[in-house]
Length: 111
Length: 147
Ligand SMILES: Nc1ncnc2c1ncn2[C@@H]1O[C@H](COP(=O)(O)OP(=O)(O)OP(=O)(O)O)[C@@H](O)[C@H]1O
Ligand SMILES: [Mg+2]
Image (cartoon, rainbow over all chains, first blue to last red; front, side, top):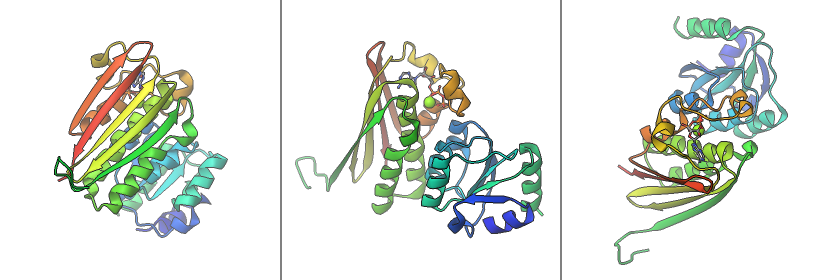
């Protein structure tokens, strides 16, 4: 499944990193603790978080994540957007909570 | 560079880190990752090194005043030395425990301060040495062997 497919099916906003929409997704990871993501997320995963600062993109890039989904209508900071565009890793958004969007992504991914 | 040690080459990289500067955290890790990819080091080893170096970097940013990252790569291993001037670690054994953190409220709000950094470094290196002097600073040495 590509990032563009989850954007369409989960009606996600695309804030930045449009060039990375054809990245292939290997799964998802949910955490707001950066060292947890650093240690445990795997390549190609979509990271669901409420953190909006640019260290999120540093980690997404170092870990080769497929995309980041910001929950609760949170918007990325300016530096986050810039970094996302530089690395071609999309930052996406939803009005849903972490619980709801993680559930939907899990379902979509395992159907 | 064939020398008395019989090594084929030695590659050195040096970076500086400013305490409190979260905007540049991850830069040394990102550069080292690029170099290791160019050297065709296997993916799993690169992933381990990137995790450990990022955590070491962020610890300088979050807990110390300033520091340097010295990287030495030869054909069999990578040795990374992260030295900082900072408050030091009074009890290294306690600091190594998962969940132990003295991170400030501000640092925690960013999602750091889970007390997982040092355990991540331990898990992802072949050798980890920490020396620290309270009020002076901390030196972390990490070695990863190439397979
Ligand atoms: N370079 C350092 N200088 C001073 N204290 C340090 C340094 N590195 C680690 N420490 C101390 O060790 C504790 C544990 O470090 P560790 O990296 O495991 O967790 P953390 O940095 O608090 O949180 P996390 O890494 O999960 O974001 C820190 O909270 C701090 O008290
Ligand atoms: Mg840490």
